[in-house]
Length: 364
Ligand SMILES: Nc1ncnc2c1ncn2[C@@H]1O[C@H](COP(=O)(O)OP(=O)(O)OP(=O)(O)O)[C@@H](O)[C@H]1O
Ligand SMILES: [Mg+2]
Image (cartoon, rainbow, N blue to C red; front, side, top):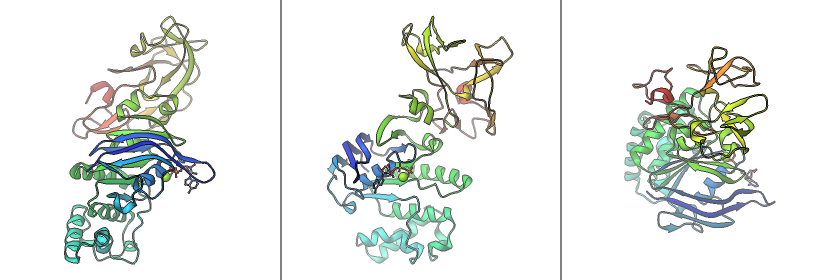
């Protein structure tokens, strides 16, 4: 196990595109760390640069107490799982899993014992003699993980390993992945562009845009206290309403209406200051006309299973009341629960919460 640190890391491709631009991050020993951002923001580039598959243009990378900036990939003690699994089609599953040990010149008997033990943990026991083409996508994904585990790395690097799976398998796989990482305690960097996945799995999340770090924090921090409007609009399963206004007499004046300031903003904004008011749809509730704090027109209602999201639009009927929750900020929402699988505003603790229970209100 080992911490990973990048200092002023830059990866510039020919033509001047910076896949990674001045990246300073420290990923703690044993941490589950997610890299999150839109397509092309540099997630894969950062991962490949840490793995040594891309040579950095400048800056340093340390893993544990070793400066690995100029080391070959094989000397970095990392295992990477790619989006397409990259299994060897002509090899059996047993040979695929034990391949890293073969490279490390581990003897045949020990290799097979290790492959067998890892495959049992990943429910692949009966499949060892098959070829990758004879397995389902989910099984192939587990083989790729088993191969990574069998190499006994100090660091796991996962580049969207769940993206080829269907929605149901993906949910199962992510629970499995989290458990595996907790069991092994290996420092893990997990790339995804799916913010729900990052919120659910990660101890901390780095949000990137155009090669640059936008915010680094726990799922709760990036959800509740986004550092800028990019993070505010990127994180959250429904898009946040962002409205420009001016602080007037303890409210945000947006022209025809005044929106309430959340309690946490008190003392942090000055009279006449221009601000962006952010409201997550899931924290606005509809109330009878005249009883809310402001009015507007619901333009879209999305059925989200247990919940319904209604982004608020122009300031007309019906009346709305924002629920600020226990802790809140000008662009934030009630905090999600801590010891559970996080999914943005809600947490999934099957025994504690009913499917329609909102954590912001009951604090499960
Ligand atoms: N070999 C390359 N040569 C030139 N530019 C590249 C190369 N590989 C990536 N890029 C550019 O670097 C930037 C970051 O790409 P990268 O693949 O790291 O993005 P990403 O965040 O992983 O995106 P996605 O979510 O689509 O996988 C993009 O602008 C991309 O076009
Ligand atoms: Mg990528």
